[in-house]
Length: 462
Ligand code: BES
Ligand code: MN
Ligand code: MN
Image (cartoon, rainbow, N blue to C red):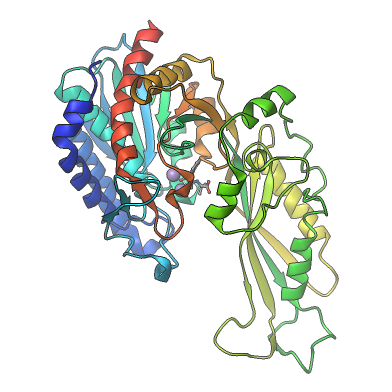
């Protein structure tokens, strides 16, 4: 495989312009007001895949948003790479914290991206990273170097739990048959410290509701005499961690696979500065489970976090009121071998159990998924390693990530193949936050590295 560098150099501006167009469509899967835009994005992806050289591309309807499926089969005897990505994005709010409108992409330089970064919702997660694969395919087909078969499966519900993707995969095992799944929807340590993601955490996401009196009450007339749902909820949530920041739900850690001392000392070798970490977040200290390092806390350990909490009066000024109801949304990040459905039930039982008399508590499970770890001796991992060596001039470091792509564990189960997570974003790219961005260098480096993966994977599979 020849280097894609000259081709990228020649088509750089178009590669950028095409991505900017895609980023202008607000494909927010969580908000039904954007339904037409989500569907419009699926159509745009279909066209992009056709232009990049896929022989067939279809928009596959599902009970939810459609899945774009494209393929180019050059020889059934050759291996097949299945590329997965998502075209939906997170809601952009809070809007006032963006320096430029989230769906009006602009290019600006940053300390970590001296060559410029694209600022827009979805720039990194995942339109930008997904589009690298489309452009890598274009390079391989236009220069007649595609070494194997390729399938694309790009979904529109990743940010809301991939419900329809499970449905689709179960019904299309034959169509999706592959030798390796390739995903760029994670990150790497730094532009000069390439890494390959070898693990993802699982997830259990729940919503809780605490109901006290049958109506909002005057906080003077009733205060102190009835359970205040907001006070009670705060107390219940606080009790979910002990003084060492261990989670107190009985049985929560039963299935947790403890990392070996060897794995932990290997992890500790990855370059990391706690001082830079604190500085980047403007915090005077880190916080977490006693006995584990920051990088362990955010990758190999399970966690429980409130993602949102509300109830009572939150408008301007002061209103003296005891609310009838209080709510919270809670995520638990899970590790091998915790079962997300079991954990959801443990949470529900425990949370209902600790509710004091005077309130009623309901727990509503949202979505979830299993954690994933991939070995570093598979053909796929070794091919990815060689690809990075070629384009970065360095051996990538295997790194377990704290984020979740719940569908990956299901892929392994249903399609019986390993997933390779070649992420090119940085943690500081602010995915899910205001001012999300993706380095232009990273975008182009991805386009350069992906074809090398195809090359080595095909060569090593024979
Ligand atoms: N691409 C992210 C996951 C990710 C980011 C993994 C960086 C590793 C490193 C994905 O789009 C995402 O946001 N996943 C959600 C879960 C989903 C069920 C909403 C997450 O991790 O919160
Ligand atoms: Mn993503
Ligand atoms: Mn995301």
